[in-house]
Amino acid sequence: QQQVKQSPQSLIVQKGGISIINCAYENTAFDYFPWYQQFPGKGPALLIAIRPDVSEKKEGRFTISFNKSAKQFSLHIMDSQPGDSATYFCAAIRANFGNEKLTFGTGTRLTIIP
Amino acid sequence: DTEVTQTPKHLVMGMTNKKSLKCEQHMGHRAMYWYKQKAKKPPELMFVYSYEKLSINESVPSRFSPECPNSSLLNLHLHALQPEDSALYLCASSQGVGSKTEAFFGQGTRLTVV
Image 1 (cartoon, one colour):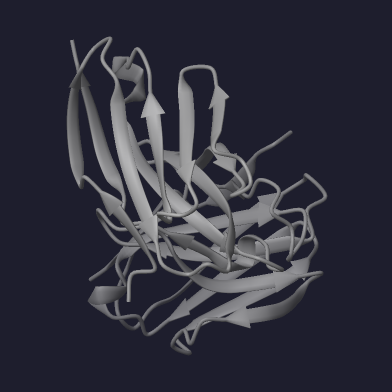
Image 2 (cartoon, helix red, strand yellow; image 1 turned 135 degrees about the vertical axis):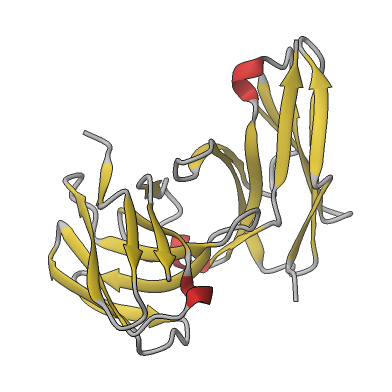
């Protein structure tokens, strides 16, 4: 059972465009939502994270939008660059737990073309 | 130093071999993790060590045997593996279980079982 659903599976965006990746969850016990970026041959790295009491969080070109009532959250990458080409995983962590209960989405392979 | 170092980077082993994967961190983290990642899939948690004691075993077959010699080191001993065990094995660490602060991943060991 996939507790965090992620779409699309792959995404191609023109350089300078906006990349949008969506995630949805069912378990209302989740209270922390990190996004990970993984380059080929590397381990995942934390990109940005949000708690459900915040509707939006921005760090540089990366923004998380969170809709608690819809149980959905999304990652927006503004002014997408070829160096952003990677696989992105959304994730969720349950209340009263930490990284030991990290649930990943299925991943999105993002390709930025010149 | 925010690195998690894994060795070796690549490993090819036969089904009758015994080998070990090694992981080291010097961030003072008290939780360490082993993940398995198949191609185009998210990482799957295998084991969690908290304060050098095994706290989570996600029903991993006994042919995988973790060991935490001290707070900086984590090993994964492999014996009698199957070809379907071929994957990227990732080590990670974080401040502690129950902590939602960033988990740092190593670059992984690419394991091929022949």
